[in-house]
Amino acid sequence: MKGKFRFSLKRGLLRPSWNKYNIYNIARKQLPALNNRTLYQKKWNAKKETRSYHGPQLREYQLKNAFRPKLEGVISSLDNKLPIPFMNQTYAFLESRLDMSIHRALFASSALQARQLVLHGKVHVNGKPERRAYRQLLPGDLVTVDQKSVMNCVSASSNNTPSIQDGKQTEQVSSKDGENEKKKDNDDDLFEQTSNGKLPSINETISNFVPKPFMSLMAFIPAYLEVCFRTCSFVYVRDPVARPGLTEVPSPFPEDLHALAYTYYIRSRNMRQGAARCQARRLIPQKVRDASFYQGPPELYKKRNVSPKEAFSHRYPVRQGKLTKLV
Image (cartoon, rainbow, N blue to C red; front, top):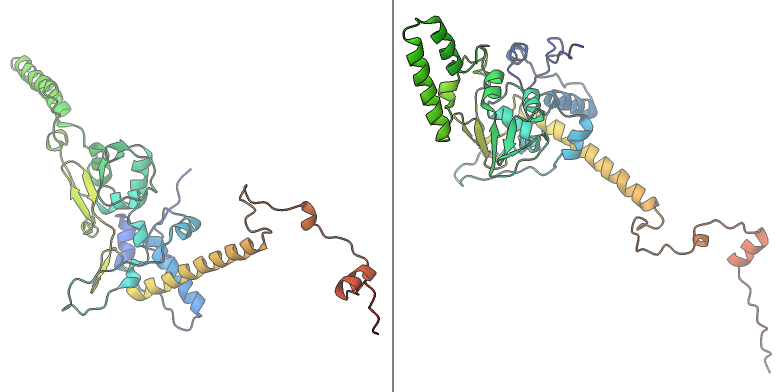
């Protein structure tokens, strides 16, 4: 069954991908007209536009559970009086995910492809294999991706076979006189490299690298990542923050649209918390989940059938003792 086409030219939603249709949507993208609409319609449209670019691999309930209302920002100097774009930090909590950080480090052409690399066991975090794409990276974590998988994801050429095998094939076509000597030299070199514990570098194993078309538009590295392309690894330095006049969360949308999306998610979060509080109040007793809590006898929670005469006597109690006579 063919997968769903995510780059609709009719809807024009933007995705974190290097696909040519997505680049075309970015080139002709216009902000949605929010005039003559209710406040909820504005919030919904802003959420729809920003949600398609930030975390499209997540479902809505997953994003709502991971949403963080606190927006972080720093002040660089007292002389810089530019406003801090806090609202652009609405989706900053997604940047610490493993799959999204791999895409930001230019090791995958899209966030979904980075998630696929993690699920296939091509990613190591701090020297250990990791198959959880939703893992939140901590400052100082070292992420390493398989070099051959990175070349298959990023390079446009299909001929990414090792050059050592290419050398063996060319030797078979060469003359018979120099064939034995070249094979002996190559075998001796490989034996020395493997005996010393040294493997061929990426420059020796990869034949050629051809960047994908339209890659230059997305070829940028955020400030919170330190990337080494020789080893196909990067270090997650810190969480992204907002500074005066700029934000470290890459986004093609302005701050006003992010502000409407933030109010949408903060409202839904408050409504969910309010519903949870109301449900907790209905529990009798409130600590019913605590095994050490004494709930009391069951008669305390059962409704008794009381006759009207008995109910009247409970409402208006009559003194049972006799009154003393006054002398």
